[in-house]
Each structure stands twice: as structure tokens, then as C-alpha cells.
Length: 296
Image (cartoon, rainbow, N blue to C red; front, side, top):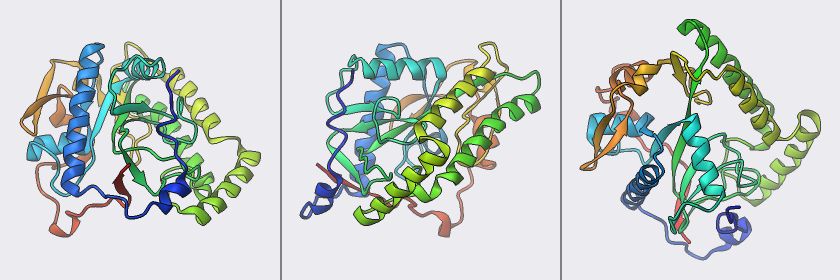
């Protein structure tokens, strides 16, 4: 099993650290780009399929790199390759000393339903979760599922029913800080832990719901599907044609290097963003993340 001790920290100790060195905006981007290249090498070594996704794909198409005011890196993987990546990580087969794959399946206290490829020498602080779990600067790894349905409308209903159930769980647990409502410092985190225990008695543990949702996704998964989606999207359920991702291999430029993209990435981004090549108004060109990244 993968050793998780380097990722789970005494959060109170981190809060007491004297003058921790923060990464600058440019340092974060440089380190994330390094992580993306290492992630690509892992995928090449193990013949895993992945694509740039969301803001990273948008940045590649519009800026040939990061969106200037953003510091995210997002990739997507087919379910089969995603699960293989997690297995490789948990078996300790990925040789990447400064980076690691984390997920709720392998790292207790991590609550997101997607995995991350994290830098081990940094911390995103304060914790995003009631558990106090801390992780390093990371690339988000999202799961692209084949969805059963004879029509796009039927595929949408199948996927959206599970996404709606997930959104319902988020509402039930919102007061506990279990999912993407941080950051939390010590006193507030203690209150969230108490609320979480109450919710567990009433509704069950958060991890049990994630496990139940994955079983339901298996129930609508179709190896020969015409449609695909990322079910746990925070904004909306978007159904894409299978060929939008899986027709001819395509790469896009990102910081002078080439990375895989969905085959018809123009259709993918138009469906999600609309007119994605037009810059948003200046007042919306802002950095939205609230956490600080520090060197360990």
C-alpha cells in the first residue's frame, strides 16, 4: 500500500509555523507545469490516456499556456485508466519522488470525489476539509465516464440523476465542511468535526456516499456508449459525443510543449463555455482561489 504519512500532517503545527515561505503566483504556475510534465511521463510509461480539461484546455487554446489570472491545472481520464492510475499509486509502482497521487480511496481525510497529483514539498493551507487533511500544490484528475443512453437526452437523465444526488449530499453535509467549503482554522474546524459526527449518525459517513455513487455510476456505465461526461462537475451536467474525445488523437500547445486534448476540443469547450475565445470582462479576470501555498 502507498505510504500516506508524507501527506497527512498535524494541521495545528502548520498553523504555528513561523513565517512559512509562500509560493508566488509565478512559482505556483512553474511548479504545476513541472507536475503536468511528470504526470504525462507516468501516463506514457503505463499507456494511460488523459486529456487537458476545463481551464487548462481553455488556457492552451486561448493563451497557449495558463489563463493569465488562473493557477489551476486540470486533466481528465477515462474511468478504466483513472482506476489503473489509482491502483498503481496505491501499490507503490509510480516512481516520482516529489509527486504523489492522492484520492479518497487511499488517503483518509481527503474528501473530494476526484484524485489529485500533488507536490510533496508544498502545502495548500489552511485545510479545505473538516478533517484537517493537507495536500500539496496539485493537478486535478477528473474521471470521464461512458454513459448509457440511446439518445443524448437519455444519457443526460442517467448522469444528471447521479449528479443531483451528489449535490444533495453536499447540501446535507455543507455545515460540516466536508466538501469544498473551507478554508478552516482550528476552532472552526473543531465545530465542523462535531457537526460531521452528527451528520454521520443521521446520514452515514461521507466516504460511504461516495462509494454508493460510484456503484450507481457503474450501473449506467456502457463500454460501447455513444456519450461521455464528468458526473461530479460543480456547475452542470454536460453530455459529450464519444467521438468528441476518442476520434483522432490531438495535441495542443501549452507553454511551448504539446499535451493531449479531446479530439474535438472545440466542440467540448464550446458546449461548456460558449464563446471561449473571447476574453471575459476585465472585472472578471481575477484570481479566485483563497488558499495559500507554502514550502514545507
